[in-house]
Image (cartoon, rainbow, N blue to C red; front, side, top):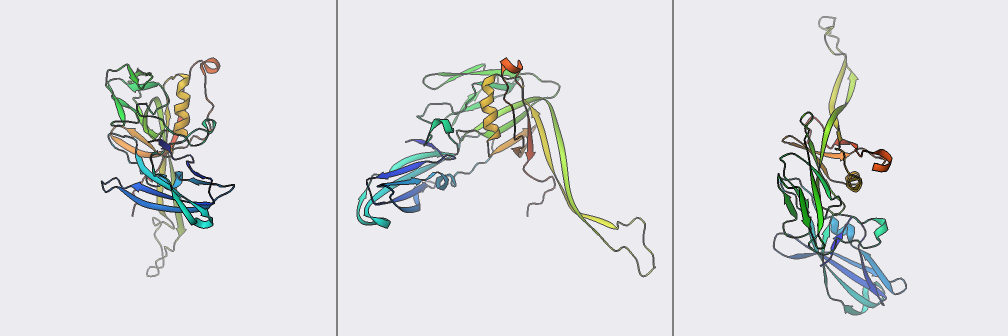
Length: 311
C-alpha cells in the first residue's frame, strides 16, 4: 500500500481505452469503512486517460496540535473502469481497486512524478542532527507503528530503519535565553519539532480605525476638553517573533527549507502554544566552507489577533 505525498500531483492512469471512469473512496476513520466521495469520467487523449487525485484526497486531512503529534493520514481506495466509447459509454472493463495511504507532504521537482514515502520502517524527517535543550525529551517521526520514536532526556543517538540511519542528539544549554519550540509539518507530512535558542525578539503591529465625532453640548453651549474629538475603534494587533537556531551542521539546511515551505506551524514558549506562519521569505543557506559557523534567524507571524475577536 503506497504512501502518497498529496501536496504534489498523484496520477492514476488508464491505457488502451477511449474513455475511463475513476471512483475515489475515502475511509471515514470512525470504523464505518470507505465512503464514495468522487466519480470522475474523462475521455482519452491518444488512448490514455490521466486522473490527478492529490488535491481531492488532501481535503480529508486535518492537522491539530497536541501533546503527541503522529502524522495525520487518509486511507484512499480508487478504482478505474475503462470504456470503448466516449463519455463513459459502451462496453466496460472494471479494474481491481487500489488502496493507498495519503500524507500531507510533497515531493521535490528533482525526484520526478508521483512522489511517495516508501515502505514502512523509515524515519520521515530529513535532518539527522537534532538539537534539544538539556533534560528535554523529543521524538522522531516515522511512517509505521505509533508514528514516532521517542527520544529520552538522556539519549545521544537513535538508529532507525533498514538500512539503519543514525540520528545524533545534540544537547544545548542556554541558561540566559532559554529555548522556544517550533512544531511544523515537514515535507513528508509529519509534524516535526525544532528548537531555537539564544536571543529572541517579539514585535507588535497594531491596526485601528477612527472617526471625528461631534462633542459639542447644546444644553451648555460648550464642550469638554477631555472628550475625544477623534474617536478610535476596531483596535487590534498582531505579533511577530524572531527566533535564532543554535550553531548547526549544514545538513540542517534541508530542515530550514522545509520549515519555510510548511503550511502548518506552531510556536511553543513555556506552556503556551501559538499558531504561527514563517514570515521570512528569503534566506541564504550557509555552509561551513563559506561561513564557518551555520546559524539562522527566522521570523514568525502569529496567526491570530492579540484581542480575542472570534465570533
